[in-house]
Amino acid sequence: MTAAAGSGVNGVELGVVLFFFVVVSFGGFAAVRWRRTQSLNSLDEWGLGGRGFGTVVTWFLLGGDLYTAYTFVAVPAAMFATGAVSGFFAVPYTIVAYPIIFVFMPRLWSVAHRHGYVTPADFVRGRYGSRGLALAVAITGILATMPYIALQLVGIQAVLDTMGLGGSGNALVRDLPLIVAFAVLAAYTYSSGLRAPALIAFVKDTLIYVVIVVAVVYIATKIGFGDIFGAAKTKLAKPTPSGLPTGSFITGDPTYWAYGTLAFGSALALFMYPHSMTAVLSSRSRSVIRRNSAILPAYSLMLALLALLGYAAIYEVGQGRMNVFGQDGTANAQLAVPHFFQLVFPSWFAGVAFAAIAIGALVPAAIMAIAAANLFTRNIYREYFKRDATPKQESQVSKIVSLVVKFGALLFVLGLDKQNAINMQLLGGVWILQTLVAIVIGLYTRWLHRWALLVGWAVGMVYGTVQAYRQLVPATVVKLVDGKPVTSTNGMRHFGSPLGMFPFTDTKVYIGATALLLNIIVAVVLTLVLRAVRAPAGVDETEANDYYSDEAAPGVVEATEDELAARP
Image (tube, rainbow, N blue to C red):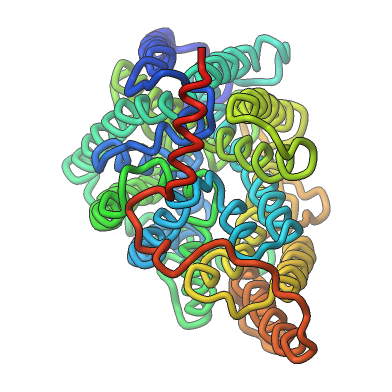
């Protein structure tokens, strides 16, 4: 059976997806009573789950947070469309990330726990005594997170389209399932906070592991890895109208720098995202973080196997058994894996796979919205509008902002072409990487001047944005016309690639890595100048022992106890 445009709604698949959606929705609302203290009226409780998650819960939470629905759709889609450089790089970068966080994340956890910091911008504010630098980190985190939430909707849309709920008919009917899903997500996140995605992550990750194991067994027994690699190599070697090959089956000499910098730069950026830090700061101790750094690569193995499904889809398309045309008749590489699942699995198990992808969108979307809301509340609302805000007021503002963030992302996807969300997520990776200098280097030394860090951040942001905008690719659309694919090109589109030429060379590298290098150079040079003229360096409220501590500072404990005592 070929998954094709114009097919009707598959009732069995839809029924299975609805069943799991009801299950996780019930879990999301029930999570308000899971590990609950007297009240959720503080960011420590609502936004960080009470800072009490152990190794197992943190493992599922981080897995659900980092390996999103868009990851499960987009990585094999990139393998399907252009091969290894744009697709498989996600596997080594997630592996490289964990030794990096093993080193610095326990230090961040300790100083945050010691001083009651909820966001990375809180740490920057305390470390450098700079409201402006903290504001820059907070705004960058919010800007980078918003399109990431929107992209989770792209993953759900791919599943809905495959089940027959896409198309170009009535907009309300087409988008209603997405609106309902996000409304329910917003409701249980509002009531349960971080506990909701932590509990739901158990279901999501279990389903994903089951689906991937079954898919790999199917490929090994029914197709054979030799056949899928052969089909992928042939397809990616075909020349495009420009004369260049369609993609890269494996990396070659011209792509080593592109592949290496993209993987390493993405690894550095991964845990700079607010949602990643929120999941880490919710853990119980430094040891929990270290243990998770050791066992989280199990998800990278799963991702590697998932990426190969892109090549399996190439094989099935070549055999004429499936295509990647959506209900609206437009080719979309994001449909490669959902259509592959629909082709090779019975309807009930395809429904399980689609439920795994859909739930895989809800978990990270919830954490991302909470993280963005925490940034706004602590580093914009409290810092600039209400300095004496109580913990209860902070939690109420954060809850409201989390709703605004979710529905803002929903309107973004429904009102604009999803390519805009993809473009913004590309920019988000470049942007969030520019916060690394203030955060990670700040965990070890305060030598860099706060003003120099702010200027370096601005230079990196501007350079990265301009360079990403200048990457042009043909705006090619393939549509079915009278049952036949017709290709048309509507000019050029910006933000076409995360890669750009390294200055004064003809070598392509990751734009974010070049922007980060400029950021560091500017920060170092300006620090030398500012220290030479004795510019005020700000006050550091942290101490050396704070970066190794497992205990909260007495003042933080007393403030928490006072808040508990004041609750009705």
